[in-house]
Amino acid sequence: MKDVIVIGSGMGALSAAAMLCTKGLKPLIIEQNWQPGGCTSSYWRKGYVFESGATTLVGLDEHMPLRFLLDQTGIELKTRKLELPMQIHLAGKVINRYQDLTKWKAEAARHFVGNQDEFWDQAYAISQFVWKSSTKYLHFPPNKLVDWINLIKKANPLDVVKAKYSLKSTTSILNKHQLNDPGFRKFVNEQLLITAQNHADEVNHLFGAAALCYTNYGNYYIDGGLLNLVNPIIDFIQSKGGEIIFREEVKSISKSKAGYQIQTKTNQYKAPYLISGIPLNNLLSMDQDCILPGKTDKELKSEQLYSAFQMGIAFRSHREFESLHHQIHLETPLIESGSNSIFLSLSHPKDETRAKDGATVASISTHIKDPLNTQVDSSKIEKAIVNTLIRHDFLKEEQILFSHSSGPKSWNKWTGRAFGFVGGYPQYLSIKPWQMVEARLDNDKAYQCGDTSYPGQGIPGATLSGIIAAQKLASDWL
Image 1: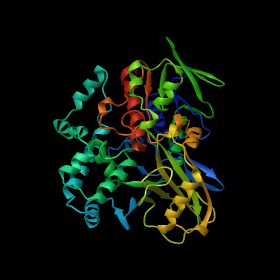
Image 2: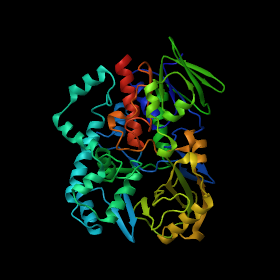
Image 3: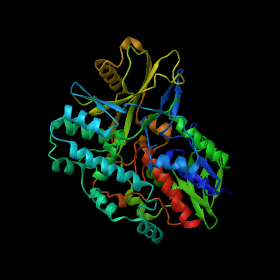
Image 4: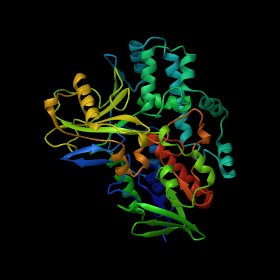
């Protein structure tokens, strides 16, 4: 009998497991892959190290979920702070997304029509509220009396005022500020797509402001890939008596008075507590009796979700780059996928662990809508992406040393996620923050975390979901 079983080893699951270690529990983590991290990981191919999903690391500033996790556990990360978080390539212009808000407002004013200062000042203030509240209100969304008591104890009237932005779309805020420049609207939509997984019409401005301002906080790089974000967390868990098992996919979950019984293809495990770090879609598709009927209504279907087409390229660079991260807005939608932008992340020039012979490693990704029902010709997308990178002077074709690509089927195989969807549940205006998937699965001793539960996408969101799941388990039972 284990103390607690954690299914999956993504950032949500690992955050929950690490936090439970601080409560004295020894987690058993069951991972279907041979590598930990899920969509926050790295893999080796032909002597190069590529990212398996996430490429940007934000969350180390005060009040942010990852900072909270590190402070609570004492885990230390070796990072490089990025001077310029991102560049945007739009309509022949290169827009620098400076971290400093004053510099960013001046840069935005140079490239877009309309007075944006008030919009960005307001968005940044809202984003600060979001991050301060994220680790302050760890019982949100509430579904038990203990949650309400904790929320009321910490409530601040000013917080309620800011929370009103959860009812307003980012589009409505843009309209209020009369920011109608088509180029700026496209910029906002594509920036939101890589952070909130949806466009301004559907993203409430509480999340939208935080998403648009994430480059105004510290952005970091970890040598060797984001697997080296995951490994120190696993080391901490193991140092506290926890375990991780690889290559075992959970097939069924049953419940008894003694707790939860997990059946994999080859083994059976038991524990009084359960934390699921896999998507709700996967959990609902397996033989299980740990989910309340009401949770099934919160499942989003393939047509509401995204997968990604990702391409990895190793090449000899002919120039230096001002930033490691680039969003390239396309003049016409990308062939096969219909995407309006691609996102490019480069290895750090001082990172000698990801490539041999001084090569640069690039990860390029773009969205694919409705992955269950969408098939794409990978060769056509690969050619279009390479041509785009050549046009924007990122590389020359003869400099390419190695390239490969992956689509929804590859994501399904690598992560095990239903029909290969990634990026979590997108933001939808009709789904308010308090209506999102809550941590308690059965109002007993089973809990959910990861990017299909509140608060959603990205490393900060998944990390916070794990912290919340651990907090609610501890409040309920420890």
